[in-house]
Image 1 (cartoon, rainbow, N blue to C red):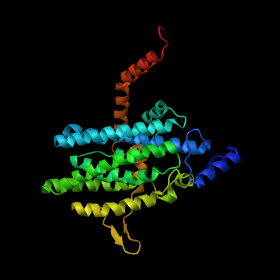
Image 2: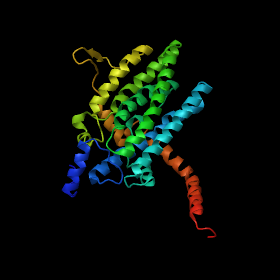
Image 3: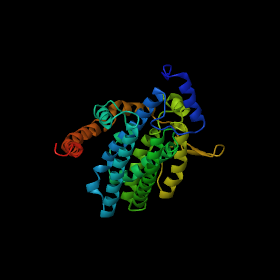
Image 4: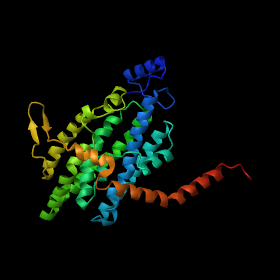
Length: 317
C-alpha cells in the first residue's frame, strides 16, 4: 500500500523519471508523501541505532584492559554520537524535528536496530561488535551512500569511512585475544558465538517477508535487498574468522562451489521478532538509560537555548 493516490499524477511521473535517470532527490524537490514518510522512518531509525549503539560499549570504557584500548573505544563511542547527529540532521530536512524523533524514541514508539538489545558480557564483546556488527553495518551503509535522497547519501559517506575504522579495531581486539592464552581464546570464541546470529538478523527479515523492501528499492532508497546484503556479509566474514582461528557457530555452514558463496543455516526469525517487539535481553534497560541521560542533560539543552535566544535578541533588549 503506497497511499500515493492523492499525489498529482504529473508530479509522480516526473519524480519517477528522475529516479530512473539516477538523479538525486534534494530537500526542496517535490516528492511523494509516502517517499518522505519512508525516509523519515528509515533515517530516524538509523539515527536512533547510532545513539543507542553507544550504550553496549560505553560501559566498557572504564574497564578497557589498557590505555590504548580505552582511547580507541572512547574515539569510537564519540564517532557513534556524531553519526547520530549527521542522521538526525538529514531527517530534519524532511520536515520532522530532532525533538520529535527523540521523543518517539524515549516513548518506545520508534525502533532502532535489534542488535543493540543484547548485553556485552566481556571485553571480547567489544571486539565482536566492531568486527561483526560494524562489519555488517558497512555492508549496508556503503550501498546507502548511493541512496536516492541526497542528504542521507552524503551523511553515509563520512559514516562509512569511520565505520571501517571501527571494524578494523574490533578485528584487532578479537585477533589479539584469539592468539592469546587459552582463556583469552575462549573469551573471543564465546563472544562470536553470541553475536553471530543477531548480526545476521541486522539485515532485516527475508526479502519475501519484509514489508518495506520492495517499495524502498523501487524508489532507490534501498539499493540492495536484505538477503543479498546478508549473503555478502557471510562471504566476507567466514575467511576472516578462519584467519583469526575462530569458529562461526553454524554447523550447516558450507562452501557452495556452484554459487561461489557460503551457505549458512536457518536464522531464528522468531527471536528477531521478539526482540523488535521489545522483549529482548536489554530492551528495557537501553531505553531506561537513554531516558535518564535525556533528563540529566535537560539543563544543558536549556542553557544552550537561552544562550542562543540572547544572541538573537536585539541590542539593548
